[in-house]
Picture 1 (cartoon, one colour):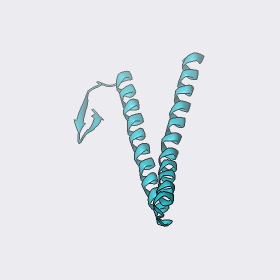
Picture 2: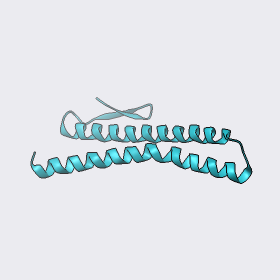
Picture 3: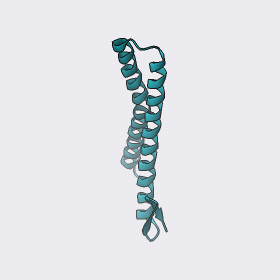
Length: 98
């Protein structure tokens, strides 16, 4: 592996890490902002902030889960291309290597 390849992989991994952080942090912040707006607009109690936070955390977890599945699939495809038969079967909506 030459230096350019290592630098490229490092940059890709840093970008993926930044994407993961943003996809986890943004949904709770947006939901809290929306809940605060609803509280001010309709004179709701503070309970709406708790609801917004729970919904936002749920959105962040789902986003992280989908991101993890995408990364796992990418690494499985790279491993299949470098070794093995490369055959895969679809079981329950997920790809499994032979």
